Length: 306
Ligand code: CDT
Image (tube, rainbow, N blue to C red; front, side, top):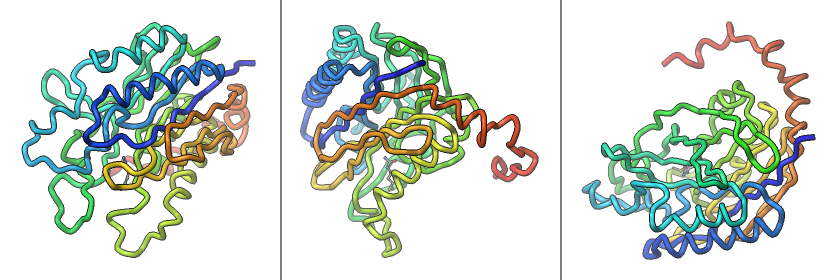
């Protein structure tokens, strides 16, 4: 059978004043732990190199340039690539991307142990707002700092460990959209790599969302997505008090039955590992979610209408 030892590397907070070297040092230690625990791939969170900077407003976009990567690897991120080679481990990294022609995206890549970037994804569902909102206690300026991703939801067959795996990606808010999962499912995705930064308090809350449902909604979305598309997922958070604002953590690895195989229990750097039998993806695909046999696209037209 095809097996994959999958690690999710939750990260504790990264403060605004901390440089990339601090985060990268912590990530290299997590990769070493992942190697010791037999993992073949390690998944890091969304925007893993810095604080979740969309909470900070810059009137002039150029002032925000320092939050973005213009090349990968760079001097700052090279130790991740070196660790991948040394420990023979692939890694998924979320980061802010600024392209040579000045486009800005919330991006994730999967890097093979050789250092080759095998898959890139740019976040499609950008939550929040584009202008400073004085009514909010904390800003969520993703619509200011990022353009909508222009790569769709690609899936490729990537060599991981001893086998090849159909991998796809989502970033944070994407996980709440069944359309995103289904577009990956339609490409026979087996493993969804998904980083997130989700505040414990909904800053748009006008008293309608109970705080105790925040983690539930995150897990509900990931577990349903895995079940309905017969795939595994690593949902990997940043956690704890970042710049005075709490991120809820609760990273999970989920199987194609929608069950949680492993869950982080701290608010710090924490590695969770699961031994995934990729054959499990076949059950759903052959039976209840056999798309060719049972999907009724003629009834779904509204999904792609404006
Ligand atoms: N990073 C990210 O997408 N976070 C959002 C928070 C939504 S509140 C504006 C999420 O969906 O988890």
